[in-house]
Length: 402
Image (cartoon, rainbow, N blue to C red; front, side, top):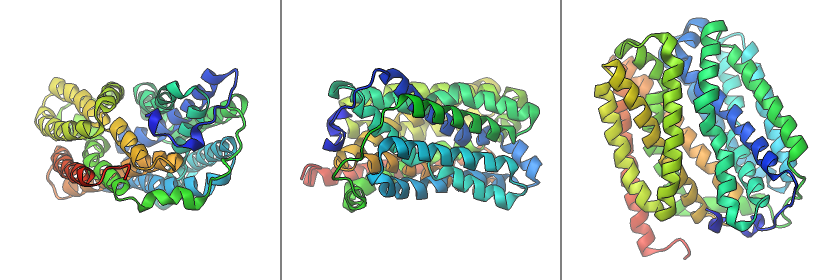
């Protein structure tokens, strides 16, 4: 991954607290992961608390995802000339305040607005955090530094999301946002203390960052993520309903189910990173059909508790294998705009989030049952595979370096 970073990340910023600086940035990722994914495990409680239907509750997840889509390119481009530490701090502060506003939102309409606002800094934060992390280590360790920042998102699904799900089930779902606000404040304090000040790159500009959007391969990579990863979210959004209503698993075990999904995501990220190091496009060609197959098996296995639990892990792992390859593909296609490229990866995944939640809610509303979203997801993965094939074919005719 380091080989595709632009010259803007080449200058190393020395600090005696490199490990703590990267950990501070990863802590921001933990908060983002908790607020994004815990809502899926607490969907039933949110429905009851706000007096809304399951598809309407799914729209809260879509609202957050759309906030990421809007905020990622916009804030990454607008913040291009700001010192990176100040940009990271500003994004964390915005994130914290927006999540605390969800705690006090009195009705469904204002909750939709607060969830949209909470999503705005998501992608831009990961974009600038990746660039900061890469600048703190020697060139040979930049890939490791970026992966450590992104690990915050995966770790949140193993520890933070199950804990927040239990907290929400036991003491009230709104406490999720208090917990996220506390994590946000902790990350803010740690970034303030441990991340060194960095001047903005002298050539940085909105035009330079947005230049990445002129490249067809960037858009194709985004489309692979949007369509191919949509099945992951179509399934995950309604996982609590599927496990309780179809598999017959008690609601008290939903935190365990979410933790299994998180462990699958961690395993998938590790395996996917190694596969992407060997061949980015080869990884896309293999993983997308694997996602489709896993979702079809999940739809059948969800009718029995133990097989459902196994497939929860498998679906989490297969979906997450896609992320490192997509991240690397975007950086390969846009080496002179690394912040925007990193941000766009998360924007694409959150369009997938919105698409998956919407389509999953649609088939449920049509009366097709809670396993139907997984089958919709399998179709999306196949369509994503088609886009990947098109991207590879075009690259043979015109390599990325051309």
